Length: 261
Image: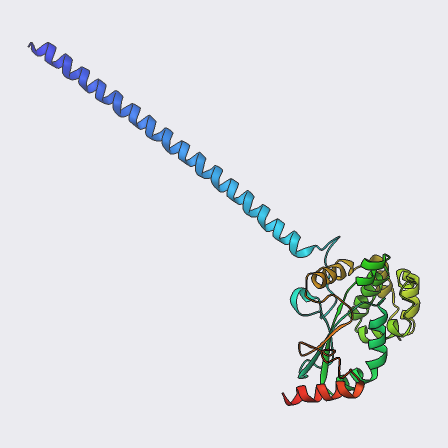
């Protein structure tokens, strides 16, 4: 083979190798570019999904059945559905599920108010009120809802118990949906000194705590409790012994027993 032909073949091989290196380099850059685009796309999609999930979570946390879920001041317990009354250190806890339109709830409140208030003042008993709307659900109307919202507004003002008691002392007949009228709820607020302010009126008129009340009813409906009032002392029904009916004296004995326990 002539030197010229040998040099020509070597030159051709070198050119081919060089071309391969160029093509491999181009392919490598292309693969790198594609990988980068994919990563960016995945990250972007992930960020979008994360933002969607985060926003969805915030919406669920911050909204109720209609509008923002606003719990009243100092509400406590699961989902902040309980309004506390009395000293937190009391050994006996009265848990009450009630409806301001419910006649039996009125009978309990009006029959045991003095006993409960006295035990609370002595630091022996604290209460946790869960306000529901069972009568609205069963009979129609909005009196249970509007009264519950107004009571929550009174809690914001630090006057829940006084207004709560006023509502029961002026409870209409079950079929008379007086509490649906916000003007009536404001009129009753005048019986509690210092309550009927512009802030309270706005809270009542705007239904500020309506979704909180609806959440309370939803939770009650999903529970094992089906009637109002449901009244528990340290988790046990105070009506558990039909052969020994509840009386104010018996309630005091039960609370005294809880002190020892």
